[in-house]
Length: 579
Image 1 (cartoon, rainbow, N blue to C red):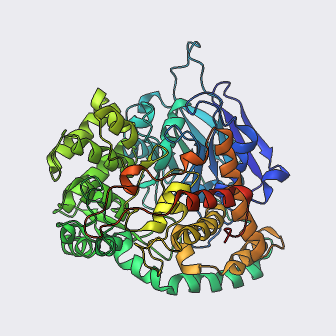
Image 2 (cartoon, rainbow, N blue to C red):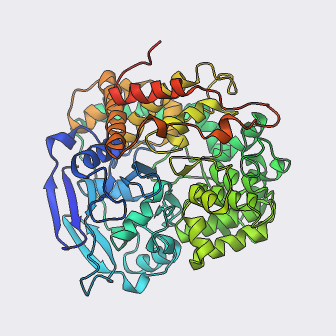
C-alpha cells in the first residue's frame, strides 16, 4: 500500500501520491481521522465542496488474514455534523489494497453553474490506472441493479456504490459494497456517507483486477498467521456467530429487557420467538434453495457470521439478515413476521439507506400515529414513500431526529443526530455510554459492551468498560479488522503486532497498537471540537434518563460527570479514567 489516489470531482484531475509520513503508520479509521483533521475544515458543510470522502485501507487489508479487509469510509457527516467513519465487509478494500492503494480520496464537487455539472460518473480503478466513466445511464438504479449492470461490463469487479437515496442526498444514505457473491449487501450505512458521495456526483467505485500483497517477512507472516487463524477459528464467540450470526442477540437482548420494541417504549417483544436467530436458522434450513445459514462477506473469512435469507420458494430475499436489522425493522416496529422484516431490509439495501436509521425513523413515525405498530404493510408503504422521494419519504430519509422534530415526538432514540442501534441504553448501560460519548454519534460498533460478563443494567463500572472497549475497537478498526475479531483475539495485541511487522517490515509492539487506538480517538474528538462540539453534545437524551423502561423499572443513570470524564480522557489521549 504505497499510494494515495486523489480524485477531484470538479476538475476531474486524477493524481497518485506517495503516502506522506504523517499517514504511513496508520490505516482504516485512524487514517480517516488524520486526513479529515489535516485536510478538511471541521466547520465545512458536509454536502459542500470542502468535505472529502475517504476510502481507507487497514494496515493488514489485502493480505489473507481472516476478516482484516473491511473497507473504512469516512467524511464529515451530514447526519451528525461531526466526524464519521463507517466500515463494512465485502471485496472493495482487499482489491484496492492489492492494487497498491492505501486510500482513495474524493475531493471537491462539481459546480452548479458549469453546464456539464449534471453529469454523473463512476470511478474505474485498475492496476496503476484510474478513470472517470459516465454513469448517466445508471441514475436512479438501486444498488443491486447497478452492480448487475456493471458486472456485465466488468465481470468479477469489486463495487462500492450508492442507490437512489444517495443521489437524492438523504442524510441517512449509505454506501453498499459487493460481497464474495458479487452482491452489494455489505453497507457502510451509518452517518449519511452515501449523501456525501452523491454530492460529488459519483455513483460508484469499480475495482478491476487483483494482485498478491507483498510481505516483508513471508515466513514470519505465515507463522503469525497460523496462530492468529487458530485463535479466531476456535474462539467460542466465532462458533456461536457461525451458527446463528448476529441474530443470536435477539433472544439474548430480550432476556436482558434491552430489545427495542415499539419505538424503544419496551425492552421485551411478545413476538420475539418469531424473529429470533434460532427461528431464522430453522427457516433458512427448511426452505433451502439459495438460503445459507453461514456465509462469508469477504474472501477468506473463517468466522462466516453472515447468512442468505430465502423466501418460501428458496429465492434470496436479502443477505444478510442481521441483529440490528431485526431489532430496528422488526421488534422496534412491532413486526413479528420475519419475511416482512427481511423485505424491509432488502428495500433498504436496494435504495442504499441505513437500516438502523430508517427503522428508528419509522418507529418515531408510528408513535406519531402515521401507522400502527405491527402493521408490516404500512411499514412497506412508508419505504415506498422513501423510494419515491415524497415529502414524507424525504422526512423519514432525514433520520429519526428530524422526523421526531417535525412530527412532534419527544421519544426519539438518537444522540447527535444519529439513531440508536438495537440495544436499549436503560438495560445495556455500557452501550449507552458508548452511544453518548462516541465521536461518531450513537453507534454500537465503536464500543460494544453487550456481551461483557457484568450486570448490564447496573451503572457501576459502565463508563470504564465503554472507555476501554472504545479504545480497543479503535485499534481493530485501524487495522481493518471485523468487530468479531476483537471478541476472538481480545487483548492479544502482540499477535496483531507480529502480523503487522511481518507485513510491513516494521518493529512495533502491543504498546504501539494501544497508542494507535488512543491517538485515533483523540484525533476524532479534536475534529468534533473544532466542528463546534462541546461536552453538552455527549449526553443521553432526557427521554432515556427520566422515562423508565418497563420490566426493569430502570433509567439510564450513568451520570453526566462520568460521561464527560470518558470524553475528556479520549480527547486528552489518556490510558485510564480518573479515579
